[in-house]
Length: 396
Ligand SMILES: Cc1ncc(COP(=O)(O)O)c(C=O)c1O
Image (cartoon, rainbow, N blue to C red; front, side, top):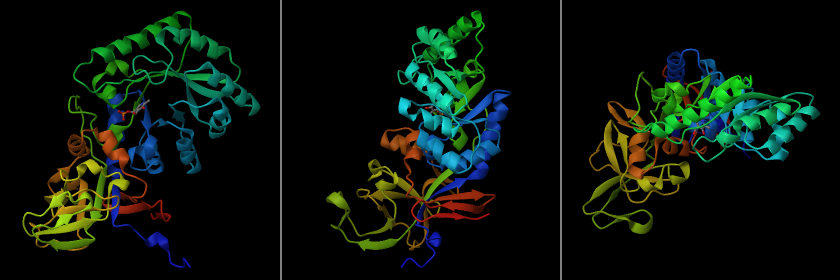
């Protein structure tokens, strides 16, 4: 039983990550920022590219901080031996305070109860808990109202074993054409800064800008910016300034596992949504909506085969996708197909897919699930494969 080495099993559908691209992007962003610190957001499995590998790569190339949104994500990084400073930018419950201290991370605060629980946890551990107060300048997600920010900081400063590391806010729209609301948010932050300065209260790290803010709102850079999407090589929208070159880091590929010739009148897939009007040749790709390849791509999506576009037909299955290859007489089982990324001159970007399914590039890349192995490339060679179903296949 199970006597073979399953590390050698590689599902013929995978996410390919170009580590050189991530390194280039992070270095370029750091250069653009001058002396401003960079918190690299690696939540959601590093936007789909793999949290641990992304964390290592961004830190190796100059990121000062890592950003996550839950303790589980922080645990994954710490367990992998990542010692860099981490901020959990989302909410926790009071009974999780000991974990924040144990993980040695910095925690977003927008409720006094959490700060009090952290203070107690830190006293028990004979250490200090580090916190960042979040101010809600317009996102209505986390954060205290700007009118209460100064008062909240004063309360935090009275708590034993609490170190206030930062004060931050978030933009709901930094990458649109109209910047008026974002500028109003920045003004709300500046007002708090002035009020705190008047009371001689100094907070080391002010941070606000996400990818759009880095590009278009220099007055929001403050001491640190929190960047996700740009690190992975994608612009947050087409309305932003593009002052440097980015290299897209993620591709999604699969190999043809079956080819069939169908006749006029035959139907393809669940719901019999595609009926052949003439004889056709179709290929089956072993990847489906359970892998995060959006089911809305049924009938409208395209893939790249031999450097040319092929159309998705029928409905996407949970684990399979049908493409029409009537115009590819040379196609055979085992041929690689690119679902996202470059094949020669052709490219299907996350933005292209997002436009088809009525979503955003963030959603497209973050959806690709852990069932797809992550194949990491450096200088054109595979340096590591992470396969959550079998084990990690480490090399180099
Ligand atoms: C609090 C916070 N900061 C920063 C970011 C990074 O955003 P972006 O990927 O646009 O750089 C996110 C991501 O949504 C976030 O939730």
